[in-house]
Amino acid sequence: MCVHGSALVHGDLGGANVRWGRDGRLVGVLDWDQAHLFAPAIDAALMAWHGWDTVRLAVDPETYRRARAYDAPFGVGHLVGVLDGRPLTNVEGYVRSIVAWLDTSS
Image 1 (cartoon, rainbow, N blue to C red):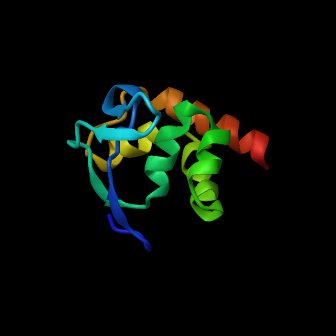
Image 2 (cartoon, rainbow, N blue to C red):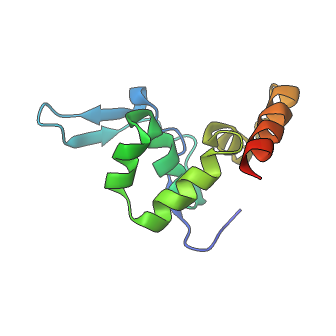
């Protein structure tokens, strides 16, 4: 799947795959097996384990907006899994999450 503004995204930027130096600078990114050509906002959303305020400081406003939109209804990790061809493991929970988000967002 290719979207406007596509770039190579990592797809799994959890804490174990990101290495930081003692000075706080990024020194490496490991485990690229879930990389895709997709919107850079995917990686921004995956970095939210640092907190959304930190993500807001790290990316431009449009990327931040898109990251929140990708993550809000069901969590960006589910989206990356589907892009990677993996089946959803808890479809009922997935649907409940989306319905709950729609109920609070409308």
